[in-house]
Length: 207
Image (cartoon, rainbow, N blue to C red; front, side):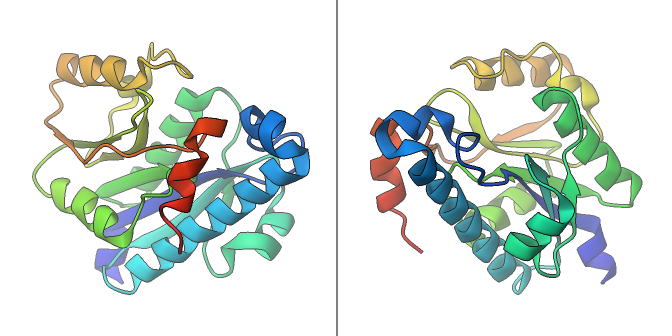
């Protein structure tokens, strides 16, 4: 149990409310279809997280937006702690998640989103393995962002000044990491599913 407290894997996701989930896919799938995709992708990632936790001493956590704890627990979390991401932009919400995890005694913290169908227990293991010797691990997304970020020490300034929602997120984060002297490891590049042309990547990674 002590080792599990030292490593934490956190999913950032959104409650699959039609019209609020996967909005860039609504023209292709409709509001209900986009929400259904968000639901399925989140459920897939949670199942893989649970599988990983059966192999590796890690604590799991879900942080959500656009829902409430009762709805999230009924839908997704089961025995996994489920917390609101809180207010502010993505930088604020990431800082908060990492700060809480480190304050509670975690030494290696990894945050993933539900947009990357290529996430797997093997990839989670690579991320936590990298944090044994590096301070930062990033999973580059093919759209210029990242699908995974992990830290082995608090670094709230890492998320400052990042042009979120653009193709420059990864590059800006790497620049910030360099300025903060964070030793960094990059995982394999994978595709996110955010746009109609990305849907083929989801079908390539069924679970």
